[in-house]
Length: 368
Image (cartoon, rainbow, N blue to C red; front, top):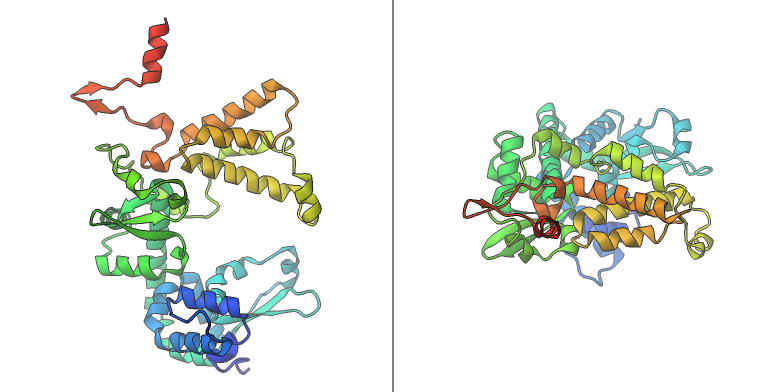
């Protein structure tokens, strides 16, 4: 069996211009805004040919395994059970998204039902990249993946960290990873693309979650809980938090999900505009957005009230009970502005060896 695509260019040419531009961004390859499609293709082609080591640091272990399988099968990866594809994108497709993002492979679709049948890579790329498809490199790819997950987990809990602190966390929870390798993971790993930005403040570099920047000014981090320090998490905590489907305190989350499920009302204008989208999709998106914003924002009460406005309650008691469920949950999960602590577990602050009593507690005592 021969390779379906012989050259890297043949694969790139299968993609739309916007996709190629995205791939150039992922590769950090510069191009002019008014560049022609032919110029974009040539820039990406040259980059994929020249930057083998950079690609290795970008690709995940799953990407490397799929490339190894394709090499054994003359550039083709075939899904075993095409019937399963009718239920939606197969797990294998999700694992190979990184290769598609970089225009390294091209998915073959069935002309009749548009199901994914196979994924192809070019012979030219496999010949150039085959030295990386060895057991030692595959093992290293897994090691780098876990370092990237710890970084993502740390950003989930802390939002913004000094670069030195982030390296310290990776060192502590992922073996003795030297600074050079850590920098390569942070700079190249495709799984970290668009996850963070680098900010310099008072001669210190901060690694900041992209969402974090939408809710706080980086300067605020200098005054948060000064002297308290970050809440300590362990390796399994960071790895769990790196999963895009991760949910803290899952049982309580499910309780909230179930409580509001039959109370959520989809806007009629939205339903008319997108009639093919089921109500359950809107509900899932809405509740995830509520809990995500509630965890990140300092304006928790406003966010919860806006959420409740979208519900149809049978009574005021039902509304009050629902609000309590959400507030209680948000008080128990980690917060960026608490450096990983939940509101309910914040350690008592100390001043001149005296415990500081919160004003709320003081006012309650005065009323008695």
